Every structure is written in C-alpha cells, then in structure tokens.
Image (cartoon, rainbow, N blue to C red; front, side, top):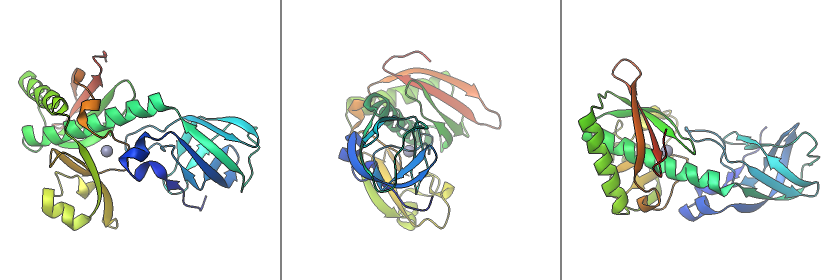
Length: 247
Ligand SMILES: [Zn+2]
C-alpha cells in the first residue's frame, strides 16, 4: 500500500461531524481497499476505528475494520469486487463515531485536569471505547478525595460548555507554551515537527492529537461511573463512563 489517503475528519470540527463522502478506489489488496479520501477513522491513538458501509458499482459493502495512517485500508467482505479507479460513496456509523468523539474529548479533559490537580500526573496510556474508556496516570495516587476533586472540575468545565479549538503548531512552539510533559509532545518522534493540536478552552488541555473531538464540552455531559485500579510503579488506571452508565 503506497498511496496517501486524505483523512477528511482531520480538516475541521465540522468535518468530524460529517458522515458521508465520495471517493475513488486507489488500491485493492484482497479484502482491503484504499480510497483517495475517507471519513472513516482508522484505529489508532487509543481510538477504535469507525465502521459503516461503502456504496459502489458492486453494491452496498459493509466496512468492518479500518487501519493505516497514510494509506487508509477499509476491510470489506471477500466478494466486494471493487476495482481501482471506481467511484464509491461512504457512510460511517454515526452513533459509534459520536460516542468515540465524546469519550476521546472526555479523556483529554481528564488528562489536562489530572496534570494540574495531581501535581504533574501524566497520561501514559489511554483506550477509548463507545461505552467505557480509560487512561493510565503516572505518578498518581487517586485517593477518594482526589477523585471527588477531578469529578467536580470535570463537571464544572462541562457545565461551562468550554469550547475546543484546533491548530497546527510547531514542536518547539508547543514546548515553549505548555512544556514537553504537559503536552505529551515528548512521546511523539523527534522527526515530527508540525502537529495538529487539540486545545480545550485556553489551556485546560493542549496536546497533539489526530483523533476526533466534539466542538465544546457541553456535548459530553457529566462524568459517569469511575473505577481506579493500580497498575504498579505509581501508575493508576482510571476507567470511566459517560451518561451515568455503569462500568
Ligand atoms: Zn487525543
């Protein structure tokens, strides 16, 4: 797979909310088809892929998996019969995408708050899900008192409906503004100079991210159930839901 797919969901907040698109088949490798552009999010950065369907000259085809960062591969049924150059229209499963957008933005909010409230606790891992998500914080203790504190701060920011913004920033600019640790920029290979920055409010959270996010925190709603478990060496795994769902 050599071509580069234009990942349309990265372009703007509006694009993260768009569900349909037209595209051309660039490459076919068995069940995997690369398109010249796509709204399907490929699994990565802790966020699972979108699923949905493609409509083309060979009928309606279910997209069951999406992978790759440059050439984005859409996994189709074996008898898809698509060929290079054919035009298709695609539709993503909106409920699943929107759940991931809300959960992913909630993760950024929790990461930013944890760093500020818990003396530089860093997010060292994350896994977004439509129903439940988690982040790993280090160093962190996460006492009952601290959990109450972060819940209050989370719900207050949501009640204020704080807006998000995106920009492209140079590595050094980001380090100068918020620091390498706070932005997690030190986790990104040094060869990457310009990156897409997702910002909550002025500086509640500022970090490089290629995921999909909501326009403002009001869309997330209050924090749901929370569960903490120890992962050793001062690392705590913080699991959470939204919409009052149980874990
Ligand atoms: Zn992110």
